[in-house]
Structures are given as C-alpha cells and as structure tokens.
Image (tube, rainbow, N blue to C red; front, side, top):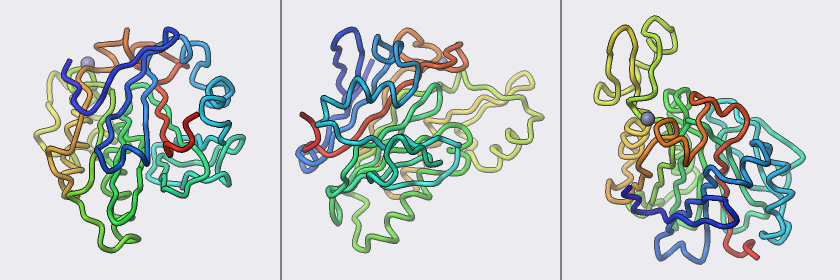
Length: 257
Ligand SMILES: [Zn+2]
C-alpha cells in the first residue's frame, strides 16, 4: 500500500498510522490514527477508557472527545471542552497555545487532518462521513479559518485523508432522500449508479473539497485501502464492528511525554 504522508507503527499489538508532518510543523504538532489492535479492541470506542490507558503518555493532559453528530461544528482543543464533557461537534481545532489533546472516532467515516503554519500554526481534526461530506465540513471549517486568520496562505496547507470506506463498498439506496440530496452535491466523478444503488466515493469528494479551498494537490496525502475491504487493519461499522472505533489523536508535540 502506498501511504505517502503516513508511517505505520506497532506497539503492544496496537497498529498505528502516524502522520508525517512537514518540516515546519514537525516540532509543533503530531497526529496519529490508532487502527485495529488490542488497545482499541479492549476500550470499545469509549474515549474515557482509551484516555485512562493513554493519558500517561501525554503528561496526563485533558482530552477533547466530542460527541459526534455528523454536523459541521468545530470546537477548540481547550480544557473547557475536555472529558468528562462531551460537547456535540465533528471537528477540533488545535493551536500552539491549546491546553488539551484532541480526538475523534471512526468506523467507515473519514478522518481528515488539515494543518498549516500560516499565518500561525493550526491543525484541524475533522469527522467527514457521508453526511459530513455532503455538508462539506472540510470547506466550511477552512472558510471559517481563513475568515479568522487574514493572510493565511492556502499553499502552506497540508492535508491527510485517513482510512475510510471505499467507493466500491459504500452504496446507498437510490430512492433514499439523503442519496438524492447527495447527488446534488457530489461531483459526478465521485458517484456511480448501479443496480438501483448509488456508490459514493467519499474520499474522492473530500479531495475535491480540499482542492476547491486551494489546498495544493501535492500536499494532500491519503491512506490506500478501505475500512471494509481491509477490515483486518481497521474498524468498519458496515463490516460489523458495532463498538470499537478507529481513534484519531492530535495535539502539540510538547504534550508528548
Ligand atoms: Zn472497500
């Protein structure tokens, strides 16, 4: 599998994809995707349980772990939103001054991380599943960022598209109103109608949304493979993983013990 922009690690029977940061962000942020493994199996997608085990590796910093509702709300990685609180949101914004770690959970939906040093370092963690992609959480959160940060240079942005369900596995019934709605939003390149079903390429559409926000094509990294096709590596709701989740964790490098 070609995974430019990511590196696989394995510790104590827990597979992890670490995002490779560009030089200018190496000493500022880090982010990792915890895939199928012992830690994720045993904690069944519960962020409190995950953090009980992991927090000592991160100086016992608090964890922001929003209750994900397939919306477009982004909260800041601040102790005022950290566990045991579970505010509703599908994105977390990390800045150099953030006092908490940030996380999101996935099982077929797509983890997206976007980061830049312009005009000052920031990193976004986003939950973009079918619904979030139709709502364009990527475009909306970048528009919000540009608005609050005049002088942001989009060519300084790097984006990572993590493991999600592939275009051959994600089908929806044609007559479903949310399918019909998605057909008005998705580029025709990113869906296929076949035998009364529509197959959606969520990852392809996210890539298009990033490029619409002027993120350079060469700065967009994506993990090959699929949560459903490669279920031995990932968790997939459609493949029967009801509880365990892929866990995306990000924060300031200073929080790593
Ligand atoms: Zn697949």
